[in-house]
Image 1 (tube, rainbow, N blue to C red):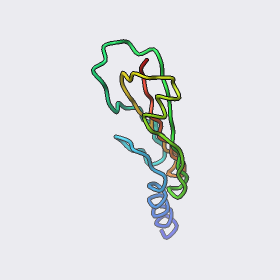
Image 2: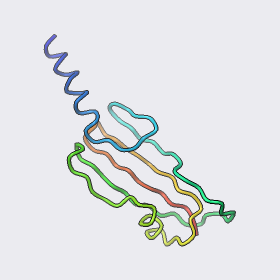
Image 3: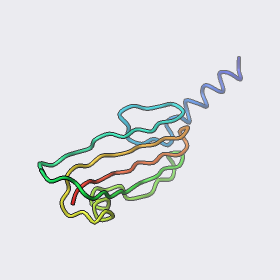
Length: 103
């Protein structure tokens, strides 16, 4: 019984260590794509740019997941819409990616 209790406490403690913004969360694994924002642009988006930030155990985090960096990475000067992708692996590794669509 003590081992089971210790295992459950450990799982709960680690589950939130490396988290990223998600509309829904998975305890062991999460892979979510969702909209972030849109503009009134009527032109079809022809380019895509991405920018990411990563975290390890919620202790170390680095990266630039800004819309500006994603647009620059895709050579975009007029933004059509922005989505994001978020992944979480066992509460240990997390990644948040901003995806910009435009021209």
